Image 1 (cartoon, rainbow, N blue to C red):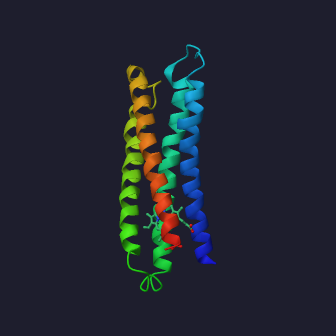
Image 2 (cartoon, rainbow, N blue to C red; image 1 turned 180 degrees about the vertical axis):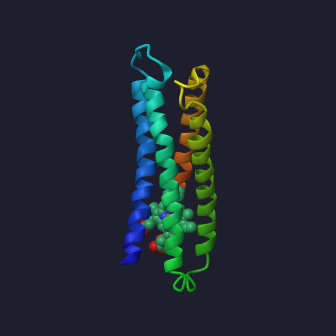
Length: 160
Ligand code: HEM
């Protein structure tokens, strides 16, 4: 039962991360950017708001994935001894993508997003918004790739 709950949490976090990145970066923003945007303050633009919510959402999902993944291994460490050769090679490759996803999401949430936060208090940073939001979209796309590959390797691990 515990394993079912841990893997359920692991899968929900992977689903939210991949789903929110795919929807925002591949569907919503390309569609919204084709429509002429009303001239408003930078912090009220749709792109700014979407990316402002996306970055911490992905970061939290990656943290939940790491926490639930480690908890799964701790719960099952006795059963992990007799696994087929190659399981931990696959696991190691998965961890490369997890580490990449972690640092990409930390950079987006705590460096890029923070550099254009509180624009009412630091209005001079409004000039940074177009460049930083573009960067957040590029780093988000890289995160999406890393998380998707980690998910594929996870599915492979579960059936190894
Ligand atoms: C970006 C981060 C991650 C993603 C997207 C991800 C995704 C997945 C997915 C989709 C599965 C398949 C579950 C199933 O089909 O039952 C899985 C399995 C697994 N994950 Fe992750 N995972 C991530 C991070 C981690 C981390 C950090 C660890 C451990 C430290 C971990 C450990 C595992 C293990 C051991 C399995 C295999 C479970 C089994 O043998 O049934 N994962 N992962």
